Length: 137
Image (tube, rainbow, N blue to C red; front, side):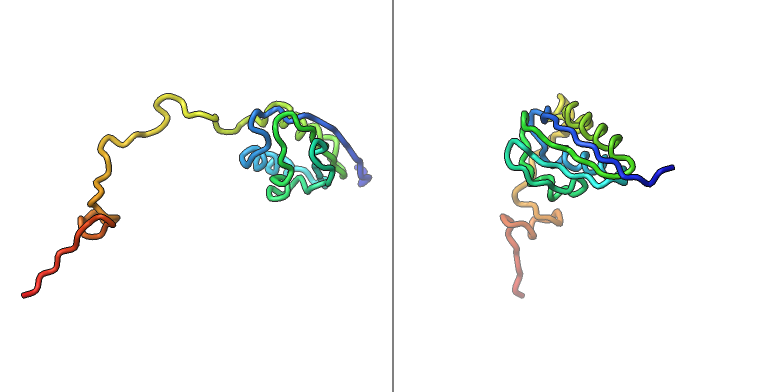
């Protein structure tokens, strides 16, 4: 087994219609973190600075929208595998993310509206709109 480091680079277009927002970024970071290689990503459509591909905070700075070109680079023993997997993930539209609109019946609806006079403890004296009675004997 060789300790030689290899380098891989690939430019791909963001396919996800919502771009690389929080959920796809987190999935990208999860996937990137499975590899030992150092991974950087640059949004060449906006700016060319390389950001850490294993940092969600840095990847959010990419501001990558649909159609932007990302340059994914990796250096290390598994660089080719890392770039291949990450590029496939982005090109596929970041699969595995939650649907953009809830399916029919997916949201639970409350059948009875909350009583504005009932507070957080369930009594009528602890809410914002409730009244508190005091007796003076």
